[in-house]
Length: 253
Image 1: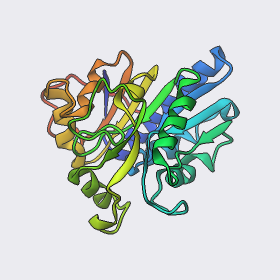
Image 2: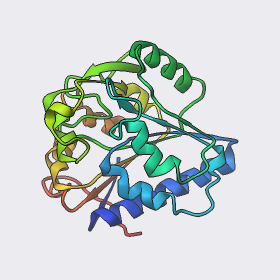
Image 3: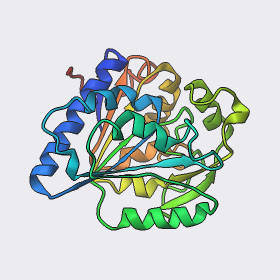
């Protein structure tokens, strides 16, 4: 894992966006198209805002997937992850395709169809974060790090639902759905390159746990340590509990 520590949340976003853009350009020089998976969360806002400003990326050859979606929200609900990603990225760049997860009335069928879409070709880049409870996508603690399913229905734990309120995604705890569709940990780690943005004080305990706990489903984020090409981006706040335990590669945009 290559760790970058920024002075601020904005600097974190710019640093990550620069590295992601470099990876995109390199892959587009070598292959006809690029497939990427993105998280839909406020922790990704600064990075995505900077990424859409990066020059010389042929977005018309990039297909974007996302990694989770709530079950039970109206299709036009502003809290939908697909809606968030459209506003943050897909409405601003000419993607070849944006593949939203639409749970509909048969969410298990949606899981099966989305898994087939993902399996058609390798995934090149995964842009993700980690949750306050160490989750990856909506794989909360007790996740199966060797899950045989690529996409599945999960029940969100309390801490995960509380985070959605703290992040401003929902007004109240009871507004947060109980279930969601998520890409599983093996699906996320199958991406060739991972870029993980984790800003803010609320994530400091999760970041510490990611570095210090044994790799296990009790803290799904620990699985990032097993990936051969994972870039982690922290700011001073998210790094505040772990700075003395890890060697960091600091650089500025």
